[in-house]
Every structure is written in C-alpha cells, then in structure tokens.
Image (cartoon, rainbow, N blue to C red; front, side):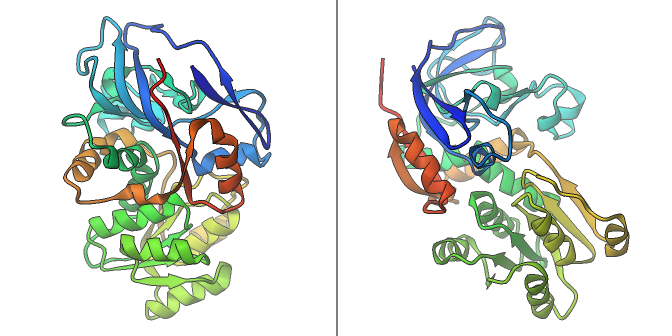
Length: 343
C-alpha cells in the first residue's frame, strides 16, 4: 500500500509499505475511501515538533476489510468513521465522555492513516458504522467528522455555546470554521469569527457567523467588547494553539463566561494573575470525538449539515506533498486526498 511519510520538516514522500495486518483480536483493517491533511500536521512540517521518517495522518473513513476474533459491533463491508484516538468506549473515562483519555487509548497518528489501508485498534470502541454505504458527495463531510468537525463541536460544547449566547471563535482554520457551524447548531444567537481571509470569512458566514472581526490581539478583544456592550462574549473558542490566541480568547470572554480551547498548544503559558482576575471557566484539550460521532454522522447522513465544505482543495493521493505545501502557504483551508481503488 501507499503511505505518506514525513522524512523531515518540510519533506513529504509517498512510500510503498506492507499492508497492515491484524495484531490484536480487537483490531480491524479498513480500506480508506479518502484521507486528508490536518492543520496539526503543519506543526512538525514547519519544524515546531521533532519528526523523522514519521508516518502521517489520523483522520479516516473507509470500508472494513477484516476484523479480529473479538470484534463484535462492526462487520466486514461496513462503512465506518473513527477518531484520532482509538478508545475502548467502556472504561470509566470513556463512559464519562472523555474518550481521548481512555485508559487503553492509542494515538492513530502513530499508525498513520494517510494511506490506502489502516489498522484500527480497539475497533468496537473506536469505529462507528454509517447507516449504509454513503453517496460519494457525503464522504468529505464524514471525513470531517473524524476530527475537525468533532473537535470544533467539542470546542463549542466546552465553551457552553447555546441559545441566547454570543460566541466568539479565535482561529479560521478548519476547526475554527466548524466550531462556527457547531455553535450555530447548538443554538447560539450571535457568532463572531476572527478572520483576515476573504475565502474563510465567506465560509464562516455560510456556517453561521453573524459578525467578522479582522483585528487580532488587544485590538481584536476591543472589537469583541464593542460588539457586546463592553462585557465580552459568553463563550469563546480557541482553535489555534498559540500564546496570542489563548490570551485573546481569555480576554474576549466576559466574567463568568467559558473558554473552550482545542488548538494544539505550543509554548502557551497563562499568567496566574491574569487567569485569577479573568473570572472565566477554561476547558478543552484533545477532543473526545468518539463521544459525538453517532450524532454527527446522523446529521451528515440526513444532510442537515455540510462540514465537507472545509475541503477547498482535492488532490490525487500521490500529490500529498503539494497538499502540505498548499496548507502551509495558506492556499488551502484543508486538503482532501483522493484514493483510487488499488487491489
């Protein structure tokens, strides 16, 4: 099979590798119908994280080809969606809704799903089957559910977005844009998107944003205060992972409000005095996508939401390196890599 490998920062190759096989009786093997590049993949690509000959990818949808002897809830031929953390869905942490911290979790990025096939550990707890074989046009949206939609949804839930609330979203990447969609679905009254890019502003409005702020940092905070009678937003989503974004989120939140942070944090440190004085709730981290998958899949299946719009560039799988370049240079919000039907 083919698999995307990051040889070193900035260098992507598509290599021929052995097909995966069942290693544990709880495993499943899937043939991916499509794969994609995540904004978090850009951290090692840009050299912010150490990487050397690392297999890439943690988002996946596909058809089950083989199951281990203990797999009971899915079957060969099912079309399935999974999360970037494999989880058992039975431990106390999973049952509390925090599958990303499952006591038996496996990070799918260590397996790599930018590939023709993938081994999925803990298949019963990780994979959710769709009601049937999806139409081709639904596959991008189902792919989005595997990470960026589920992550944006968790961010909105963590920020307690809901009816009567004003929600502000820091970050106009795929996660931030889908956090806008999530906030709208959860009933938010007003949604403020921070964005300086016309194409992303347009998509944010399609997903439900009522206001766009182009300023960042203190100037962006001032604009939020201006729109909220000086109080700040009830709910603020941080979907970047930088110091500036985190502080912008905290300072944009009114006292008693909620910050939901899902940007992969890099060198973020919140000064204790500012946190103490802000009077806000902060909740986030790696999203428990598995918790939301059944609901999100049904919304997509019923065509009530179309998160697949975040894929604004589709390339053949063998052009993965160009996909990374396009996202790194902000020529694309999110890249979908098409897989052919190789034997």
